[in-house]
Length: 419
Ligand code: AMP
Image (cartoon, rainbow, N blue to C red):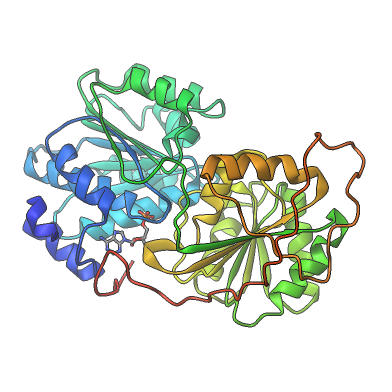
């Protein structure tokens, strides 16, 4: 199918073509017609399969179709997302796909001075992409009104509706117009969240192009059992492989991220850390350095787990296994994007085996074990006592060659030119 068959208007088709997209991805093919009809939507698709364009393209089209020429633009669409980096990225996508439509977009996020954001709001905007804290803050200060919102999007909807953000979302819902279109998207959707979402959405269409919470097959996953104290050495050993051009390493804590970044920097591997205790400028700088490949390794907490799109990121390493299985799906989804190959390696010590089991249950896959490595797990019963778990048998897999950044085009044609 071509984008033309989705009845997309010329200015957007032109921008999509400039991005290098030739055919819509499955989530785009299914979601765009539903959104253009004005229906609510609960959309689930694997990481890196084009969810942003699946909502950005039809929103831009709806807004430019019904454009009313008023003196000052009103905010007609609001996209809320959990992290600042993701908000910035979604804003860039709106600007790219909407560049010939005349629809404008502003990104609102915390950790930076608000003046630039408020002055662009005062100039009038059609679309706001925001993180919840700064959005509510600017609403309280009277810079933002949600009165005219026609289309409301929760990106990473399961995260937005969980305990960390639900109170903020409820505050927004209380002031959003009752008559509106609501679109919720994520790669993971725990059942209790689907239940909650269905109380907010109005007769939603559900689009789930692959099993919910599944991982894309193109990501080569593996697990290394090792002791906690050997993880640094194992990481350095793995990074000796020069075919790993860039790696995103996830740790559970901010302190851990700094420490791992320090350890590998000492081994002459260019690395930086990104986490919530860094200033927003430092966060953005680290991410940009990583995207530009001026550093080889970015060590991150889960603020980088969702949505972030880094071209040619070939390898994700879970230095620690996440205790929430959905987080694993999002973390490894930073690689294997847009049909490119990817490798996801996880280090698992004895205390983390239970988390690994939960992950395998969620993704309905068993992750191959690599056991010919120099730092095997010795201490099977470290203190504090782990949850009673069955050990995994050795499966004798060879260490996989990280895939680097060979792009294998799957559902699209010529490579995109800009972003
Ligand atoms: P997303 O899941 O929205 O973060 O998108 C993942 C990646 O796929 C991004 O790098 C997009 O630029 C790219 N992408 C989205 N839609 C298409 C398409 N139809 N054809 C080619 N690439 C796409």
